[in-house]
Structures are given as C-alpha cells and as structure tokens.
Image (cartoon, rainbow, N blue to C red; front, side, top):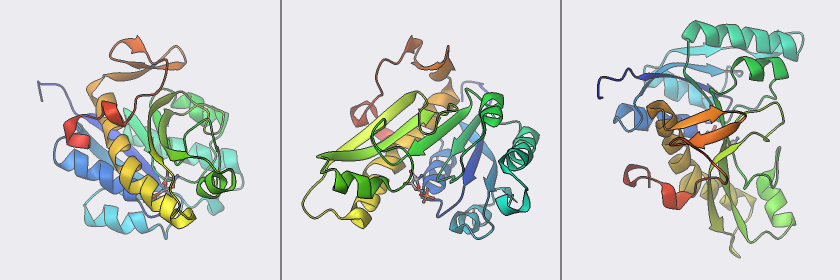
Length: 224
Ligand code: GRF
C-alpha cells in the first residue's frame, strides 16, 4: 500500500446494491485501496442491505419517511456520514434528490453513477427514454455530484450499441453488466489513490482537468 492510509469509503444505497457489491469486491481484493466504513440506506427493505450485512459491513438505515421534509432527512444523513468521516461517498443506486446544502457540505467527496450517457436522459426511466428516442447508443456515467440533478462533472462514461433485441429490461441488465460494474470500481479506485479529484468545480485526473469523460478504453486491466 506504499504506506498510504486506506481511503474511507461510505456507500449510499436504496435498492438491490449491485454497484455496492462491485465496489465491495474491488475493496476486498485490493483493487480499491479503501475501507468501506459504512453503508447507509434510506429504505429498510433494500436488498443491498442483506448483502452488506452478510459481508460484515456496518449498516445504517435512515428511512426518509421518518423525517418531515427533505432538509431534515439530509441533515440526519449528513450527521450519519460525518460520524463515518468518509473521504469518498459513493451514491450507488441511492434514489434520493439531495439538497444543495448537503451537496455543498460533501462537495468533492460525492460520486454518483447514473444509467445513461449524461447529459442525455437525466432523472428516472432512462432505458425507456433511450428506446423512445431511438438512440443508437446507451450506457452509464460516473460523475461528481453538484446541486444540479445528474448534472455534476462527469468522470467516466461507458457505452454500447443498442441492438434490435433490447427492451428496457435488457438495457438495464446490459448497463449494469457491461458498464456500471466496471466503471464505478475504477472511478472509486482512482479517487482512493488520489488520481481523481474535484478541483475548481470540475473533475481533474492525474493533475489535469478532464475536458471529456474517460471511457471503457481507459479501464485498467483489473477493472475490465
Ligand atoms: C443502477 O443502474 C444505477 O445507475 C441506478 O439504479 C441502479 C441501481 O442498481 N441509479 P443497484 O442498486 O446498484 O443494484
């Protein structure tokens, strides 16, 4: 580990947790030089929680319905995160819109993965939107989080060609297996190593501002 301390990684989930599993696998085998200090879910029934508990990861459930409004939930989330002292906060299928105050408090540490080729198809139902618009390509994007929904500086984007067999379910599966489970661990590894940073409102990679997102071609062999 070159004597460098492990980065402290927190992962936020709401659902199945396949991205969490990909991150955990890469932490466990040393591809990501980090320790997962906590998994936080806004849903007690998130399938990903069962996985996380089985893997021995410390879990916290903060049901958003227990809070009167978005600001109160985000304050509780910020407090739970502050207790973990994370260097990196990975939103992994975390289905909550975050307040500006929350985003500013964690700016530069917050990464998200979104199932589309941003800036195309922000928000929900991206696979349906790809089919509706007849897009020739689809994929996913890892980006730093800014107060604009799905609008922060992109880091890496993986794409594939949409084919005649693709319905929304197949696209969702392809986005996960062909793209997300590769690019998210890679991006978090770069960040944990200090090669990826948030600087002056943008993404910087190995000391230079990223003018366009990295791609599947940039994946290191362990992440392909
Ligand atoms: C992923 O496609 C992610 O991009 C989107 O929701 C899905 C989450 O899957 N936000 P999982 O919970 O990681 O399995």
